[in-house]
Amino acid sequence: MTHLEFPEKKQIEWWINHLKQTDAILQLSLPAVDEKWFDDICNIVQRLQFSFMPQDLHTVAAYLFYNIAKRHDILDGNKRSAIVVIYLFYLINGYILLQGSKIRLLAKSVASSHGSRQEQAWLRKIRDQLSSRAIPISNLPD
Amino acid sequence: MKIWHAFMGSKVTKNKANAQREYRILLAKKLNNRNFATLSEKEKREVLEVAAKDFSSKFSKDIAILAKE
Image (cartoon, rainbow over all chains, first blue to last red; front, side):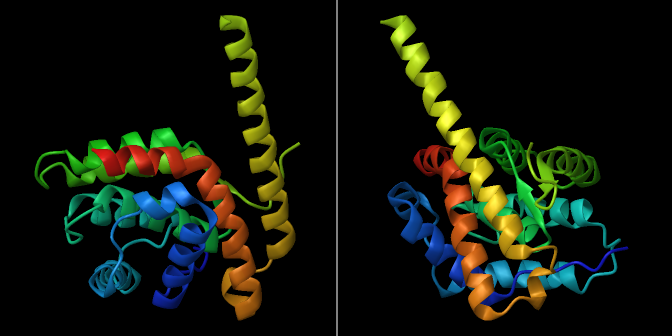
């Protein structure tokens, strides 16, 4: 297994600041980010970082995406938060995420799924979808 | 009119695809096959700056749609 990088609080703060500075639309439509938002996201990241699950990039990404989009630890903007954080997670592990609309639809389906009984099935589905839309940055386009 | 819209639409898509290609090349140059964790603080910020532009070109519209729901 390759060693995985997990975003630190400082990096998440930089990331949000860069997004807001880059795009006026994002500045208006990103979730409300305050100290509690950072704490909630960092708690989810740390829970995964120190858990005993297999350290495979796409599996961890699926857990991270599911936990942010579904678990409602974040009161407002959990789907948007899941997209913003999962992009950063892939980036710091040398991957780039494609197809925004597909990821948005995935976040919507996950957030509106019922209960946690089908959690494993959802995790497999998220893993499949993310792995087909994340490509190594080093594989340069033709 | 429809043909003009289709032409402009394809031009925008093409420009967007070209920009995303440029961002990816720039990210690859900045990372240079190194692990993100091994970069200096300055280099990490530079990578995040380019990535923010890539994210904006791919996800801005979708984040705005989700914000309105």
